[in-house]
Amino acid sequence: MSRKRCAWIILFLVGAALIGCQLPYEQGRELYVSACANCHMEDGSGLAELIPPLNGSDLVRRNPDLLPCLVRYGMEGPVTVNGITYNEAMAPVTGLNDVELANILNYIQYQWGDPDRFYSPDEIRRILKGCDSRPVILDFSAEE
Ligand code: HEC
Image (cartoon, rainbow, N blue to C red):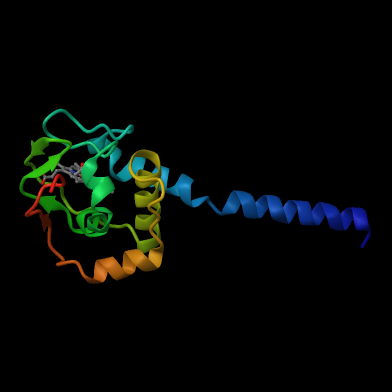
């Protein structure tokens, strides 16, 4: 095989690999838009007194370990975010595997919370093992 032909084949393979595998941040953003944005809005600002914001949320920043259980099993009861108390229920978000959950939460932390907070799929798995398998009910506010 000529060198030139070989180079073209390599270029093609690299291109195909780049198109084929989605970057984690991009996947996180797309999953956020499809699974969360209809309530929390695309810019994470929430909806009036009904849906708390994720963008700038003190809860997201200060209680990162809560988020995997909260998303997988939902939450209910009062929750105070940035001094405003919400009291609706969030249904469990099903159909996300551990890698997808990590990518969504990394997107949220990087974009609107603590950019240094990174979840690995292993960490998500470990946290989920400790969840109660039912909606999260908070007995504290993020202020404490
Ligand atoms: C059907 C609407 C709905 C969807 C979809 C939804 N949420 Fe929520 N979410 C809520 C409501 C309502 C609350 C407040 C629940 C309460 O008052 O106990 C909430 C609370 C939260 C909180 C804690 C409060 C805060 O704002 O910091 C986080 C974090 C959160 N949601 C993340 C997510 C993520 C991530 C997704 C997508 C994977 C998602 N939610 C999808 C409605 C929704």
